[in-house]
Amino acid sequence: MSLSTPSVPAEPAVPTADPHQSGHPKGLSTLFFTEMWERFSYYGMRALLVLFMTTAAVDGGLGFSTERSALIYGYYTMAVYMLSVLGGYIADKVIGARQSVLVGGIIIASGHFTMALSSTGSFYAGLILVALGTGLLKPNISSMVGSLYEPSDERRDAGFSIFYMGINIGAFTAPLLTGFLAQHQWFRDWLSARGWDPHHSWHWAFALAGIGMTCGIFTYLRNMRQLGDLGAAPPLSVAQKGLNLLYCFVFAGVLGGLVWVSSQLPVVMWLLAAGIFAAVVYYAIRGGTDGKRVAAIFVLFAANIIFFAVFEQTGSSINLFARDFTDNTVLGFSFPSSWYQSVNSLFIILLAPVFAWGWVRMGRKQPSSPMKFTFGLGFVGLSFALMVPAARLADQGLVSPLWLVGLLLLQTIGELCLSPVGLSTVTKLAPAKLVGVMMGGWFLATSIGNFLSGYLARTFGSGGEGDLAVFFQHQAYFVFGATAVLLLLVPLVKKLMCGVR
Image (cartoon, rainbow, N blue to C red; front, side, top):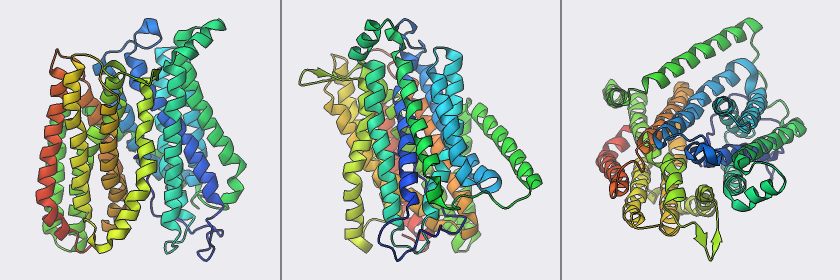
């Protein structure tokens, strides 16, 4: 899972974070379970989003086309990341991280329960609320974890590893449960037996996501005393807070404009590519260590965009492939197609400790950050290359689930090479006065990649025989091309990093 964003704490650690203690601060368990339930709600709904939109109205869905559904998915996931930048600002300048997490959780739960209502209007309203709430909660709960520890505390990385495990436990279990409610025939028969409309099974699943977030809110409220003064509101006047809030609305308007402009995607992408290239050249020739390191960051931003443009299609094109072209049976047991959305988290839980051990074991011999990014792009490209023969077989009938398991394994390896490494590298490369800005840039790059994932997925399954393989083939070629370019740039990027690995 990719939305884990530890940031530099803007406040002193709480007293419980004594670096001489052997255990972790008490507040970590509160934040662990709050985040676990928030991720449960987020991924429980996301696993169903495109499936619900593309299901015929007579079967309880919205009856949207694949193109429309994929674009909505792209806009939604883009908004989540963009609004995280805004959420961080609101916490720092208006109400503090502590209240941002609480308010964000309440808004998220309201969004899921709104989606549980059976209407198109409530569906859109729910999506907006979930995006707004996630933007408030997600970056700030991560920053609070960082604030539990002094910067020199050796338990800090272990604390984030525990926190990250909570994220993946929630993301693993949610699709299994919400997918069962939404798609499994047993539950629909159970609804029918009690006189309820079985076509409303989707809305029961959305309600379960809301219940999950509600559990997170109760957990947070019940144990807030463990957090001490962590995440308190900034000591600013009411007038200054009001002015900062006004800035938030202006920024939100700018974001809305960017979303609208993104409808002209070819033009925007060329402008974005030109802007990143210009930024790299400008900072590289500007001179000074800080300038060169910022130039390296922009190269990593470009790689991040391309990675998430393919990786995030797990919830769109890959989700549809799982439903429409895969034999979802194992040993005679039929399972919902949305259950594949849990596989990435399972692989993360299994492989993250292996990668952490491997990097430590290699020590100074481990690959540099730009080389790890190259591996990340390469593996995500391989995942789509693997789907080319699977798509050709799908023209003749349903294919084995192992194709999707293989794709998800390759993507998870790519994620572990790029996503956590990127967060760490940006914080190390960014000048002290620009850490927040550069982390915001990482969020924005991720959001652009998320929108691109929806844009690219819009043509999935729209052609005749053989076009499905072309869909995966073209994107694999594009990612392999980007991987080759980044590989050639590795020596230059390492030079720009000025000694930072």
